[in-house]
Length: 324
Ligand code: NAP
Ligand code: GFB
Image (tube, rainbow, N blue to C red; front, side, top):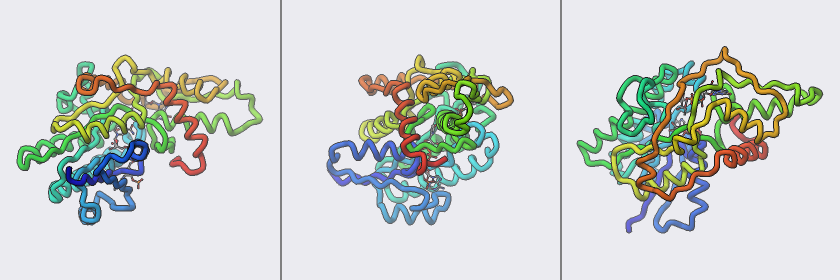
């Protein structure tokens, strides 16, 4: 079997770091060499820097994770930047992967790019069936165009450029900056600060603010589980059609339930209150993982509360070096 060189763009982020941990944990997978790139290796918004990276690594396979990424509030304030930056990154990576004759490219979409007004559960055939939620249209359209461009490269050149569609992801090495982060890292950072600051105040009198009504529903996948699934896609899935990589529909939780689980993980003794002046975003984006279950029936997801506790422990152990 010829040598496999895997370039992971976005290799230093939440998903990239989980992928690196899983690859390192495996016994050497024979002919595979992995390179985990950050924006310091190449600013992928720039086609020349993209070409220099590919010339250096000469990948046979690409796992394309690099993106401008953020939570609801960051997207709401910056839809144009999310659109333009991700359009440039994605087209640069795909066109350069084609010019270097890459055997396969796996890009990353998101369940938040699906139509806002839709039937549930959402499946892979529904990506383009209507406009995405207004809060993140920039990111959503940039991601949807990856699927369109993948089809273009397949139709014209027979390239196996495919994509995975994760639900909300959490875990170690996330971006915990609560101004721009997703809900779990944002809440973790805020709850940690509430517990560890103003120690003169009895904790049972402290109030943790849950942004929004707490009613929206989300599916969450642990980054290390997603990493295992992406490795499985790399070695076993060869369709251009996207595949949803999400926990089961019945594991969907409300933001309020999430906050209670986090309070348990932190042993937080104070009160939880809702700040309904803050947006809720999309109410739900319930995705079906039926296609994944059919192809990989014995995959086991990590228990949510265990994964949450592991993430909180990682956060506390790495507080002074993490992104916050
Ligand atoms: P992340 O933690 O923010 O990491 C982003 C990665 O992309 C970092 O390695 C970053 O490099 C790199 N990057 C950003 N801009 C770049 C640029 N201009 N040039 C080169 N590299 C650049 O993101 P993540 O959560 O791991 O997301 C990985 C993928 O999963 C993304 O495609 C995202 O859309 C998708 N996704 C994420 C979620 C979620 O809940 N997090 C859900 C669904 C899908 P630096 O470290 O140098 O900044
Ligand atoms: O992960 P999140 O920011 O984005 O979750 P989405 C937002 C939901 O959590 C809203 C509530 O209902 C918020 O009101 N929430 C409660 C909080 N407390 C907090 C907090 O401290 N921080 C944050 N961020 N939210 C994103 C998309 O949607 O999903 C992105 O906008 C991306 O493009 C991501 O794809 C996966 O899940 O609403």
